[in-house]
Length: 369
Image 1: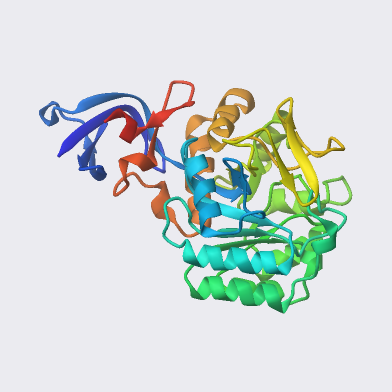
Image 2 (image 1 turned 90 degrees about the vertical axis):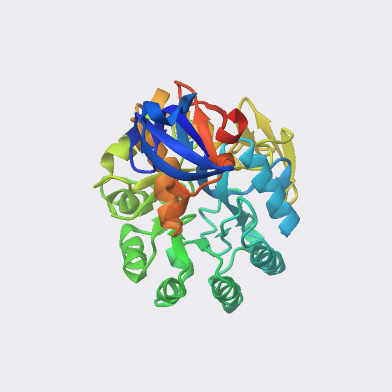
């Protein structure tokens, strides 16, 4: 048994000092107040559970749409683990029905693999007008093929987050998805606020990358943005300073009606932990001046990590460190029904991060042993 005493510790609820954790091999067996009798080894930095990212299109040069396999998911998870994200939802954007079928098979086979905690199906049941970089030719209303796929996933015990546009459904479909345990997220939508509220009433539980690919807020038409901000469900945000500028990030956080109603996602593409370019559909995408763009210069996914996003929240947006960590760990973990991912007790040392004084990633607890 080994006692470890970090300078500070985030326990999934709040930042704390004066605590030590007891390791049994590489696993945390206990947390207790620091006592001289423990002969604990001091570890500099802030210890936190690793980040939980609910929207990861790719990483390490691998795009899930291009490699909808167990091996593809494992490669993406491994790339992001090196960058501080220890649990993620591999994310399939709008594509042909057979690609979704392959990704469904892969998610079932990958259940329980390190870092892979479910799947995010972002489309294809979205608005053509708000499709972003999604290919219009694959967009379609919610259909029996997708319902069958998510039913298989849920029966197999795989968490599913499904991004759709309310206008791509008929009344009752969102309720049916919610009854299966699917986490329905509203996004890539030109819906009115009333349509969004109707979707929430049916059981939609979150919103996908607030502001991006959704009907905007205006003083007479709240749109999907206004409905999201005014709701009492968690909302996802990309915190790269590009998809949403820092001032608007701050305004959005202050506009929510209560705490723990916002979480961050990376929306990462294969360039994160990989080469500076890749191919999506029939387009070549490249990182230019920190922006991931298509040949026309339009944004096409994000080139940012969760670790970088936490630092940005604190240093650029002015978010308190405890709140930023809750947005990167606690809120997303709870949304997918995995509150254990926000705990320190019972976790492996490789799943616990050490951050420096500026909250930048310094390594894992395993690295310091």
